[in-house]
Image (cartoon, rainbow, N blue to C red; front, side):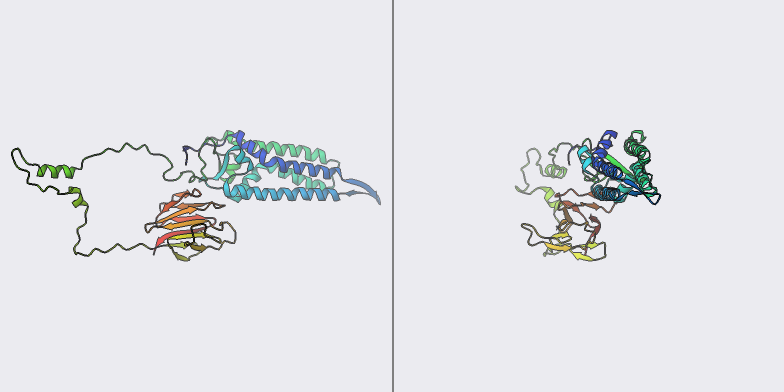
Length: 369
């Protein structure tokens, strides 16, 4: 997993750079289309009343708002599931929840609302201008509000500069209970087991292995060693004393093979499945090259959070080797002691009975029949 063991908070400059890359394009679309819409408004007098033609404004404003909402939905879904956006990938930062995993769409929308509160106010003011037909005063109203909204967004994005907990959270992060980390300078918690990290993430400095003499062999050798002038009466090939200590003495002459453990999984909907040697799990799993003998376990997923072939399970009697098949939404395991670890795509992880496996929005527990 590399040598980056520490978690490094994202610097305000990187946060701001990611925000600019993510929001510059939709901001330009909003400003340009609304500006063209307001410029197209014409007025005429009819029966002593001023009549405004706002057809083009309504069309361009509707297009601008629709495109922005679609962009927000796509961005929130992407960041909610992976902690990254186009801007954050370019700047090398990731957004997580308080435990170091993907933050979820709800948290992303909340932190976005805090950051863009000023811009939302400007958009609401534009609607008021249209409703009450204050077109002559529109530049005086909307211009300052748009600038104030942009200034507020910048201030919120870099607000982690004043965070007393090492710059982990800005104002928007405190509202949404999120964290932002620099994955170029430190570890990416989303893919390496959250804040705590996986079991074997930190390397151990082990002492070199040394050859030692068995104390049992030394004692036995001393017992059979002849004294001065005495002939050697011991057997020429008595074997190593450790061999007798490690062997199991049977009561009868017939040795029975130990029973083979039968493993099963229980899905979160209560269904039980007995595992074969090799199992593929997913929304509609399909065997790849060399996997024609694999058991296929299809799991219903109306929300489509599970990939078609999400997991590969390989049993060995004592437990299960679980491999994420480069799924879209990733996988994780929670051990019986409550420690959750994200699975690295393509890397098998051994799990014992009592472990919970998370894949997409579904889970199953590993047990013995």
